[in-house]
Length: 189
Image 1 (tube, rainbow, N blue to C red):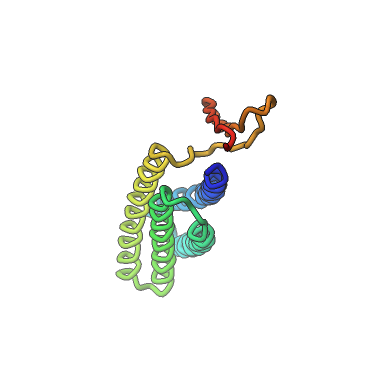
Image 2 (cartoon, helix red, strand yellow):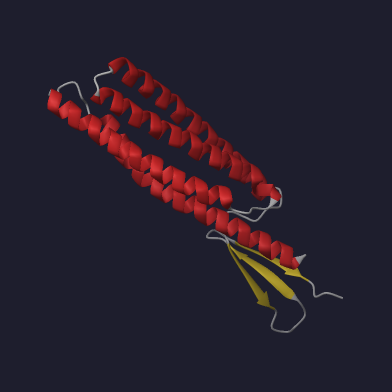
């Protein structure tokens, strides 16, 4: 039982580490895409609009590559059953975000060939995919809380197996940034 809990804890730690790495990389992409989207284009020259579209395409390609990379890693994680819903929701979020980046890239491509109707359509579909991403992230948060509250390992905790110095058992010490939770496991037999 202790070995299974420790293994599950390792699985959860790996999953959480992969999600944290994904979030860190996506935060950088988000900064780029949101800054790009906030740039007013009404007063840009044709050459500046062309450059703006090329920049959108480059950011979108990068975002697509980042989401595909992290999706592959997170989807491959072995997680305890309690965390399967959280994993599924996060993978769905990455799929939706990847679709948004793909559509933004397509919109930039359509703009390049002066197919403005297709560009507008792709931007609208990308916005829809972004909303689906946001909904999936909310689902991920709910699923993660449910897993943690339902007896799964706590989020972002370091698990350390320690021997009690007087030999009367083992304790699994879970450290959190905000508090310490100690579970004492009696020795077998």
